[in-house]
Length: 394
Image (cartoon, rainbow, N blue to C red; front, side, top):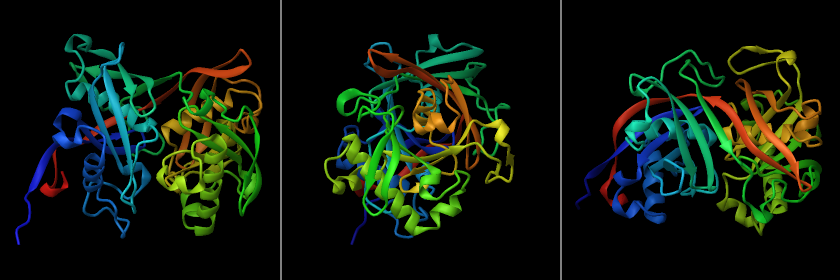
């Protein structure tokens, strides 16, 4: 019996924010994978090493967490006023499934840096020293992201002294602007139900107060106290509790139904990446996963969020956009946890430390809109060359 040899595909392994993934130029993918469909999904599953019943990704590039099981495709953009198209795939760990329903805010940072690294930006637009503005078309959600990427000696500057909680080493700061980040979901409204706070009926859990918002990524916000938490929990307290994870999934499904993202509860299995579920609480002292003491006086509120069924070790970038936006709108659960008012920026505590995010929100014609959200992240190439997969994968 003969077995096909492996093929190699040009790829770059990058960290972006508190995530990392495998980045490809569209033109470098096998022809069958240059268009959406089963061939592309199968390739990405094999690259990451999914589905893996052992939950280790030993035979792939994934890291067996939602933060490290990701693939990205970039290409020159045909959208007016944009430099590159950025398409993101969230690869399931234990299932043969790639979710294309949302963006990764952390890897949006990597997308800006990779666009320059990969030769997708007009060299005339790249300063010898300074900041290069990369205008990104986020192809999953059809939104604009502007990455302000530092450049030194004509190349992306990756090293620096910018520290990001959840990332071990400092690097160069990249500022991200998420333009008009409200999702064009059902009804096209930031609040799909029309309410800042809803009574969300969750089978097996009860009725919870919830803010359902579609800024950055569809997110279901609930109060930590309503589900028996303080908001200062670390990953182990949630991820080691199967009953807690089941409750959070029930909340996610109920939120997805109420937001009109799915029509039946069964559809939630095919939309694992969205919506996110996050729980909020007023600021209090706590010890982050690094051992660093976070003082209540240094933050505005506490937020914990789940991604792909597990509590995130820090905070998803897109969920941070939702946090900043909701905090800026008086009356949401996030805003109330932050002390009310109409702040244009908040610093929140997450399991790894703190993060500051700003949002410009305004009431127009009776509806809340957000013009942009801003945050700082960093990105770094970890390895570049080729990724190899068995030839029968494509």
